[in-house]
Amino acid sequence: MKKILIPIIIVLVCLAGGGYAVWHSLESNVFAADTFADHVTINGVDCSGLTKKQAEKKLVKEWNSKKFRFEAGEKEIGSIDDLNFTYDLRPELDKVTREHPFASALNHFFNADFDVSMEMPVKKVSKAFTKELKSADYLKEDKIRETKNAFVDISSGDFKIVPEVQGNNVDYNVLTNTITDLVAAGTFTMDYEASDFYEQPKITADSEEIKEQQALYKEYLSSKVTYVLGDEEVKIPAATLQKIYDFDSMADILKAEKKAKKEDSEKSQDKSDKDSEEKSDDKAEKSDSASQKSEEQDQDSDDNKDDDPQDVSKSIKTSAKDSESKDKGADLPINEEEVAEFVQEFARKYNTVGKTREFTSLSGKKIKVSGGDYGFAVSQDKETKQLVKDLKSGKEIKREPIWVMTGFVDYNPSDDVGNTYVDISLADQHLWYFKDGKKIVDCPVVTGNRYQHDTPTGTFGLSYKQRGATLRGDNGDGSRYESPVSYWMPFYGNYGMHDAPWRSSFGGKIYQGGGSHGCVNMPIPAAKKLFENLAEKNVPVIVHW
Image (cartoon, rainbow, N blue to C red; front, top):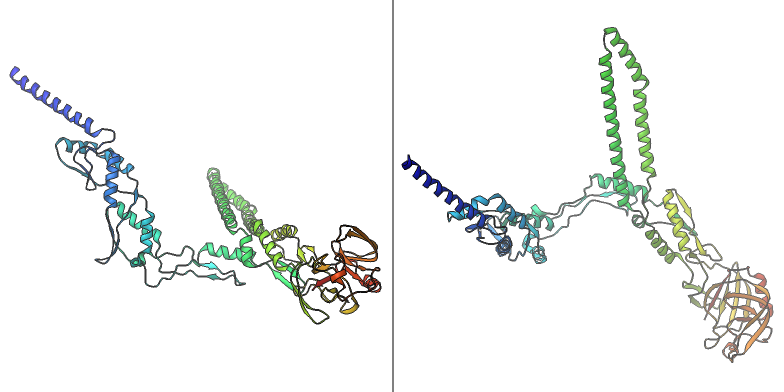
């Protein structure tokens, strides 16, 4: 018996010792927190004894040292030598140690190689790679035709949908993703066919998106606000309205409404199905006899006639009505900054205050006069607020802009002076007054000169007129003056036309040595006649050399 037990004990001791040795090897080599065992190869790269961080660095270096080749058939057409990708390897390395701990340890214990393959996910491509990829002519067609999305042509009044164009330009995002997938799998060659990577239109002519956009454009880009400027009518351009209306937000609103309607419809259907099931159960419970069934069927028939068809019909009509009301009444968001910008441009184009005007003086000279405060000017703040209100109303509106200043006659962009005006020639030292095209006053005057007490030039509006006034101011030597006049007609601040009883002569060269303080001095009879024939205010006064 002892002879049998002794060998058994020896075998058990050996097995225990061997097991401990194996376990010790596992513990020291496999379960080291961040280190691979000996004889471990990953993707053909020796990672024996390396930490995960070291293995990652070595794998990245190996992968980025490879060229990526493009082939057509079996012929290489080009390559990119420097990948310089950034990889996300830590999850894959963790997976290797998690899935193969004992296999790698046993290989280590028996001094055998352990090979494992894993993905090399690309986290980021380098700018240099992208630049080289996009500049590679061998990846492009000879003649490039760009892919274009379908769009609504807002330049035409009918807002036609212009179909998409399938081009032959490369979609580099798709191509890059394909390359990174291949590299991640350890493949560095691509059988390249350009047509496989043509950029595809994102919006097609038959898409619901473009049809909804067309419907919105027809509704909102046909300008409902028309400005009346004399004989001219001005509509807001469709391109401007496209900026003013927030169509992206409107699309989101419509999508939300559709989703809500769909959910309501599904809830209504679920309720209808549930009611039908309950009615069916009630019928089954109550059907004790043929006569009872008949009565219940008759009753159910009456109930259906009284309730279901009308209720369903009413529900459908109400839903349709609510839907129509919602669609038509939906508030399209308005970008008020774009409205203000439009009004600013509108004012810049149609304001006439200070603009250069051309006319022929009675002396026969063709004259250009700029400056002054006469004319039409839009009140930009008030007009912006009113236009926002008009656009939100959705109504057809035809009106004048809100003016902060107006001329003496109706708006006319080519002539806002009309045929009633005062013409003062500083060069001729002469004044003419025309009323309804007829010359009323024609007289010599004395004005200021260019070197001292200059008379302002430009087109001005008569400020007011006053009988009997005392004019006060400074003389050139610093002394003060007071000059009573009978007819005072200012047109720009304290500059105006008036009688000058202290003068015995007018016109000629008097203004050069004995001119006025800037006002237009007139003979008493002419000043009286002008005063009596002028309107109270805003008559154009044109002063020029």
